[in-house]
Amino acid sequence: MSSDDLLVTCTNAALTFGRGPQAVVAVHGANLEIFAGDRLAIVGPSGSGKSSLLHLIAGLEQPTSGTVTRDSCLGAYDIGLVFQSDSLVPALNVAENTALPLVLADRPEDEARQAALEALALVDTADLADRLPEEISGGQAQRVAAARVLAQGPRLILADEPTGRLDHTTGARVLDALLTAADHTGAALVVTTHDPAVAARLAVRRTMRDGRLLVAEEVS
Ligand code: ADP
Ligand code: MG
Image 1 (cartoon, helix red, strand yellow):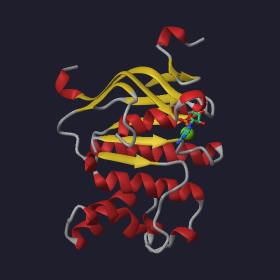
Image 2 (cartoon, helix red, strand yellow; image 1 turned 90 degrees about the vertical axis):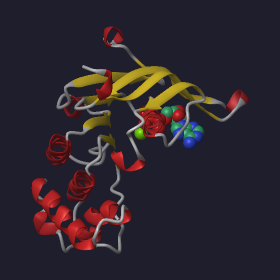
Image 3 (tube, helix red, strand yellow; image 1 turned 90 degrees about the horizontal axis):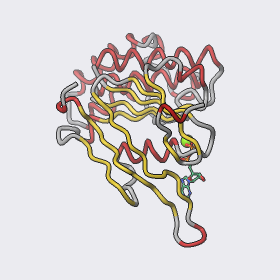
Image 4 (cartoon, helix red, strand yellow; image 1 turned 45 degrees about the vertical axis):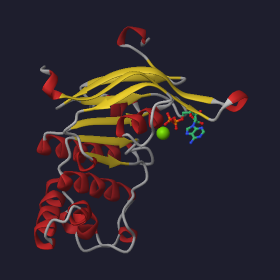
C-alpha cells in the first residue's frame, strides 16, 4: 500500500483527562495507521478507551502526548461520524436529516435531496424518507445515520458503538448499512464495539484493554 493511501497515523498517541491524582489515562500511547479502504474494528469492554481513541482519530480531542496526523487532503467533511445513539435532528424528517451534511456544505437543495434519497435506498430505508426521527425505531435511525454518511461521501467513516443499544439482528443490519456506505463511497471504516459478533464483520480487529491498544500478538 502506498503512503498516498494513509489517512491517519497515531504515534504513541495518549489522552489523559484531568490532572494530578484525579487524572484518568483514557488512552496510553496508541500506535495505529488507517489506510484507504480499511475495515477496522476496535474491540474492548466499556471504559477501555474506545471512544477516546476514536475522538483522537477524528480530531475531536488532541493527544496529551504523542501525535495524531491526518492526511492533508482529509478535511472536516471527509470524516463521517456515527454515534451509539442516533444524532438525527428531531424537527427534520429522515430525508432532510440525510441531506443535512450536503446542505451544510452548500450543495443545491434538490441535488442534496436526490443524493439523500439514493443513499436511503442503498441502505434499505427509502420508505422512511418522510418520517420524523420519533416515528422510526433505534435500528432504523442507525441505518439512516449510515445513509447520511453515505450521502456525505467521506473518505473515513468513524462509528462509535453504532450497534450498542440494538439486538443482534438489528445490529447486523446497521453494520450491513455501514459496510454498504463504506463500499459505495470507497471510505475507510472504523467501528468501535464491545460485541465480538460485530467485530467479526470487519477485516481487521484491534483490542483495547485499560486504555491500551494491543498489538495483534498481545491478544489472548
Ligand atoms: P469506552 O468508549 O471504551 O467505553 P472511553 O473512551 O469512553 O471508553 O473512556 C475511557 C476512560 O476515560 C474511562 O475511564 C472514562 O471514565 C474516562 N473518560 C472518558 N471521557 C472522559 C472525560 N470527558 N472526562 C474524564 N474522564 C473521561
Ligand atoms: Mg465509548
